[in-house]
Every structure is written in C-alpha cells, then in structure tokens.
Length: 204
Length: 97
Image 1 (cartoon, chains in turn yellow, green):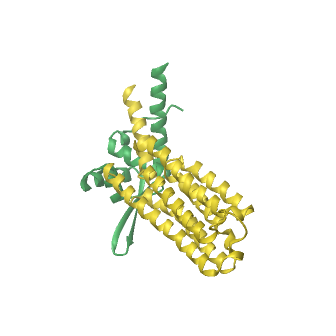
Image 2: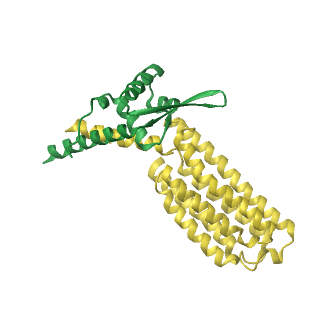
Image 3: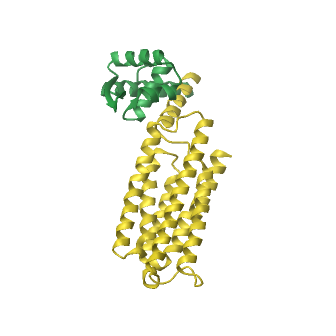
C-alpha cells in the first residue's frame, strides 16, 4: 500500500530533521583543514625551523614566548574555523530553509563544545605546569571526544572522523615529539579528507 | 501485535508533531512552527487536540521575560504512536505477501 509507505517515510524524515543538525557544509571541513595546515606551518617555523618538524620536548629547546606564540596560532586556527563553519552553515540553512538555531543545533553544539572547552582549559593548565608537550595530544583527544558525542546529533559519518582523531591523539600521548606532525594530520589532513567526502556526498 | 490505526494521527500535522516528539525529549512551540511551516492557530489547534487525548504534555516556563512553551510525549502517547507504526508496517507486509 503506497500511502502507508509514504507515511512511514515521512515519519522517518521528520524525526531525522527535527533531531539532527544537518546544515554542516563539507566545505567548512576543507577550509578548517587548510587553516590547520597553515597554522601548523607557522608553528613549525616558530618551534623547529630549520630542523625537521619533530623532535624533543619543545619546552626544553624554546624560550617561553615561542610557546605562547604557538598557543595564539592554535587559538586563531580554532576561531577562524568556527567562524567559517558558522558562515557556511548559515548559508546552507538558508538554502534548505531550516533554522540554524534549532533544538537540534543547540544539542549538537553543546555536545561538541563542552569537551572541547574542557580540553582547552586543560591545555592552559598543562601549559602552566610546564607540560606543553602534551597539548597536541590533549587537543586531538578532547576534540575527538566532542565529535563522538556530537555524532548523535548530526550526520553519522562524523563518527569516523572522531575515531581517527582519537587514535592520533593517543599516539601523540606516547610520542609527544611527533605532536606537531600528528596535530597537522588530525586537524589538517583529516578535516580536508572528511570535508571533501561530505562535500561530494551531500553538497555536490 | 497487529497494531491499530489511530484516528488521532489521521491528520498529517498531528502525525508530524508526534514523530518529532518521539525523536526529541521535548520541543518548543516556535521550533514546531518553523519545522512544520504552519500558522500559529493551526499548530495550536493540533497541539490542543493531542493534549486532550493525553498524548502530549505541556510545560510552560520563562526564558528571561519571554514565555517558552515546550511539549513532550506522554507514555500513553508513545504507546499509541508505536501501535500506529506497527499498524502501518503490518499493512505494508500484508500487501507484499
């Protein structure tokens, strides 16, 4: 019976639309990745240049102002990425005529940003304790946890991005000398790959 | 379980309202309005009817000075909706075989 089938499809679609934030654009993933790679390049030139982009505990070899410059670079990448994502999501939500400020988007943001903010504060604490070599690992892990948490409130594919970030974060915990490289892979390369896949799949 | 076609869900707006409340613990009036693309009066009528059936409950609160009305499905409403779904699924199955 056609009508019953339509009705079930309709129910499923509206459940999905009401509970999931679907205005994320693949393009914002790509751009966030590009910002992260540029940021990593700046961090590399601040910390290691002209040596290779990995090596011993950064705090041993660098004066304090270098660390704070690296932190500022990281923070700029974060703010720029959030701003870009907000702009592109607003554009997409206007096109699909759904509200950007909906119960679903609020839940998505809460799920993502509570772990991310806690991770950020933890990084400040680590910095104050002279443990900045762990910052790359902590940012990757808390971002990964935030994504995992938020995957319930958006397209499910984001879960795979979260697993990859978590694995990289754990590797960075054991090999902090590769922190910058792993951070660039997680926030840069993975975002670009994920964003491109999502763009082709949903926005193209 | 055969399920039961519930007259309360005959109307598509009411069916949608109930679907949303199955997927969300609670939902507010304005968000309903936006998602369903209906007028205030129309939405209020359907919400009232579901409330009369004891399928949904209303919570009124304030955010700052603005009143906020949120709705949630009752146990009875969830059960009725589930029955309705089962009925639809069985209908499809029967027609296939």
